[in-house]
Image 1 (cartoon, one colour):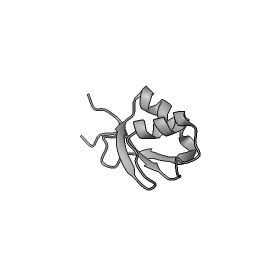
Image 2 (spheres, one colour; image 1 turned 90 degrees about the vertical axis):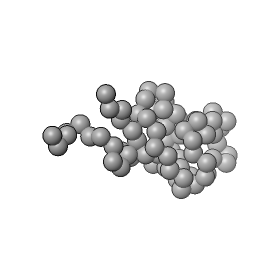
Image 3 (spheres, helix red, strand yellow; image 1 turned 60 degrees about the vertical axis):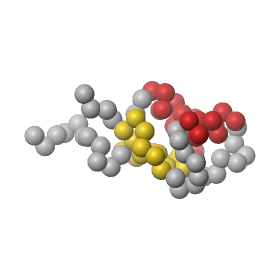
Length: 71
């Protein structure tokens, strides 16, 4: 079974944010502005992305398996 992934990029500083939002950003593995990571599209990761949605850019991961396969 293929697992869906998304690319998450931090576009705004975490300074001045609530501790729970900072924790969500760190939980996703983001370290600095402009840093991108590819994470699994799971409910727990989606919750962290929603908590910090005003600071993140979320897009499908490049090279990720799509639902329409060529074969």
